[in-house]
Length: 105
Image 1: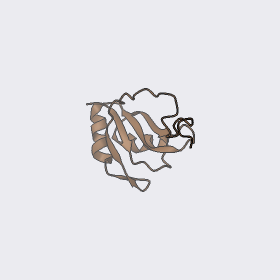
Image 2: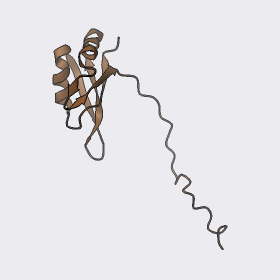
Image 3: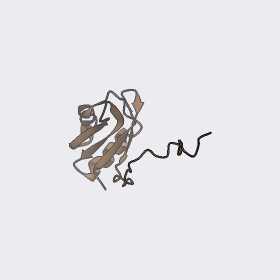
Image 4: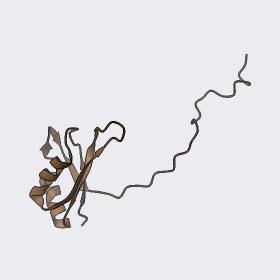
């Protein structure tokens, strides 16, 4: 079993240290990271915790999934690998203005 966990439905006030502390009662936490908006610095409402072993990760899932933290019920499960996104293309994306020469009245 994987030892990396996805933690969702976090209160926007939760920070890395809060996750570390919450999960430490289930074993040794190797890392705890709340994902933040790049532009605003505000929490995205989810994060990742890496436990020392799969057994500790399983214990954390059993102990914390659905439990209240900061007024919200946590979603805790095994983290899935990030899916590849299609490349972004430049341009204006077909804004619907058309060629002004053809649309003259």
